[in-house]
Image (cartoon, rainbow, N blue to C red):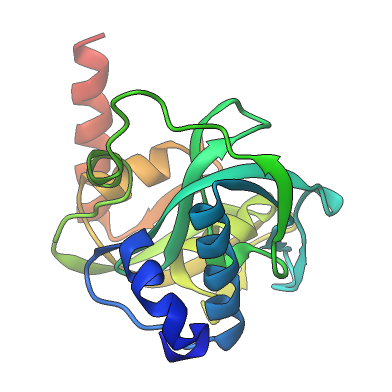
Length: 216
């Protein structure tokens, strides 16, 4: 908290909810966090732009540089990343922005933030939205549609090793925690990310999907 200044350290600590242990390695992220924290303390909206990765692993502006209006309520550390939790004007609901995906320092607006809903509990929100569980780790091979490169980098980091598949797909070989969180992540792509191996992991996923279908 030294970069924020001694006078802000106490306020910054109050607004950051830690779920796990973390550290800030990118100083720009710290300044973004500091700006969001100021907006929280002032109860003001912020405007921000986001970045994503394209198929060439290049950082580009999300949706062509679309600006998002956001009322930040809290800063959250979830094991790997910092998130700003608050109200999204675009979606008119509680949401979050990952801090390392914010393109530059957000702008604090004169407009007052949208108040949190009555009874909103950020700790409960963290538990139901962010928290991941321990699971056995296995090296898997995934076949991925070219359109999901950003999501793959979001999951495995910008240094993820990708391999040629065909004109429409690329391959990823990574060690992952095998369990419901991973399988739900795969399922959410609706076939754009497929498990090629090992067979034991494919079978676990197949069983999960079949069990889900049985209760429909």
